[in-house]
Image (cartoon, rainbow, N blue to C red; front, side):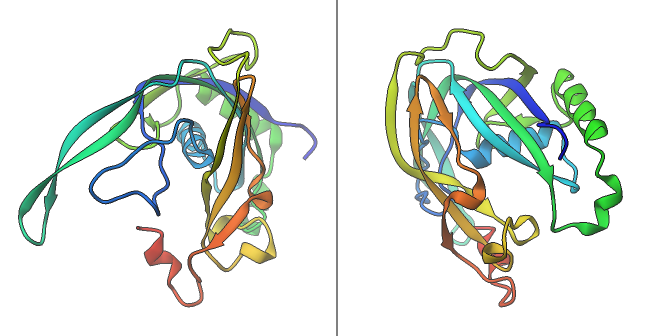
Length: 229
């Protein structure tokens, strides 16, 4: 890479739900207080996605106060045709500033001829100015959001003078087609990291520096099933 290829954008919505898919209870979902790396990567992929590149989320800035609300939902059991009442906990009135960059996907050598930094960077900036190529969501499909370009550190944020240790939380999943090194190339794994918010900013470690929890093996064809859990 000759350039940093950094993009900065604001994302906001009426509510959000960020959770660990592997530990979420079936009878209800509870959100984490801050967005996960995987959720932010999904938002960027909704703005601009190509198999040639992989988006790396560098950091996120929490702009609004962290507030949550509970909502009752009715779940239908398809086998028994019965209904069950569940409670989901959402974050409400959220807004974040995100900084990210892209790297080449080394697992797809067939796209080497498409590796033009200037072209992909200009396309990503243009799609970002238009609000993205597809509808983006804050964690789940019932939490739509909006995106727009911004300056990461210009506006005042609610937690600019606050430090918070959130603990070990879900970072994302490493899939075989986006493995970052030989250790994770043949397996599906969940990534965890120690989340700390300093002056309202959370800096994400790159995926290859996270704690990896092995949950599948591509050769045994287990990862494809576990990816749907």
